[in-house]
Image (cartoon, rainbow, N blue to C red):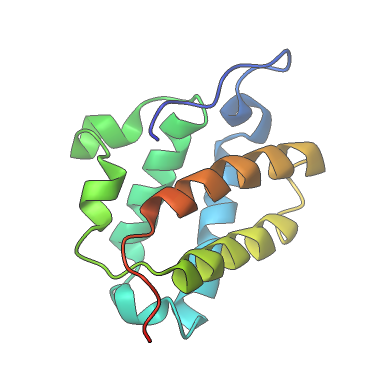
Length: 134
């Protein structure tokens, strides 16, 4: 789940989105995460490092420089998320926050937003590690 999204005719998704728009997306996303009743309890109060890690991960995942690998090592997404109870509800909430952030980031073209959302939908499903309670 950590291989970059394949190149298309227009270059990598990272090239098409660009670093500034990607950073804006991550800021908007974590503003929503902090306010989400399902997600906020499993995130730290200070989301600064979390947002930095997400931006670094997305940069490499979308075909840009391997910033996450350089700073933090291999992402090992599933293993790094195992300490946190990620239910299907939380995965859907995470995706809803990302979808809203994508809609709020006009610098990202609609087709690129759809492609990114589809890729992150697969990642979100992969991260589920806890069944719903009851």
